[in-house]
Amino acid sequence: MRNLLILLIFLGMLSCGNSLSEKENQEYIKKGNDISQATFKALSEKLTEQMKLGGPAQAIPFCNVEAIPLTKQLSEDYNVTIKRTSDKLRNQGNKPSARELEIINNYHKLISEKKEITPIVEIDRNNNKHYYAPIKLKANCLACHGKVEEFVSIKTDSIIKSLYPNDKAIGYSEDDLRGIWSITFE
Ligand code: HEC
Image: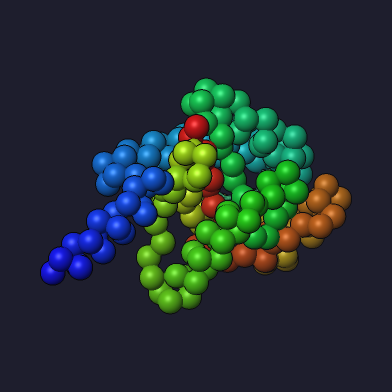
């Protein structure tokens, strides 16, 4: 019994330095959910507008130029760093860190085990909090990320290839894991 107590105290000390209470965890999940939803809304409003104006031929160059600055602007507004990243990149400017890639691979593993995937909050050794959440593809994403000829027209494909010669973000199906939100709170 006494040994067990000592062990528990020791384990408590190990985790104390870098861990969040359940309450803090919930707070950061909520903040992360709110910020990622607001960013998604801002991006998709602009995207829908451009798609209406001129289809993928207009919307792709728009994303090419505007997606990262828009995300940067929202990062400043919320005083955080907002990033969208993926294991199959289109824009090299969205490259994942080693930890982000681990999170993505772990989500893939959970999906293959038919388990639920949910947002995660972590604290790093510099005391920064990180929020990660899955980005899944919806039907209206397929015009630019789906299978060529089925959803992505040959014309759209050639525009994508001309702007992103190393594009990997194509050939997806609806509900596939496209990547993650990664939000850093300082
Ligand atoms: C009009 C074409 C188009 C549509 C529709 C589209 N995307 Fe993209 N997507 C792009 C382009 C171009 C980029 C690269 C520029 C950027 O956003 O950084 C991109 C990048 C991304 C990225 C960042 C990672 C990377 O590979 O660079 C994610 C995540 C993403 N898209 C998810 C989605 C989701 C989810 C949807 C549907 C809600 C969607 N996209 C709809 C064209 C599109």
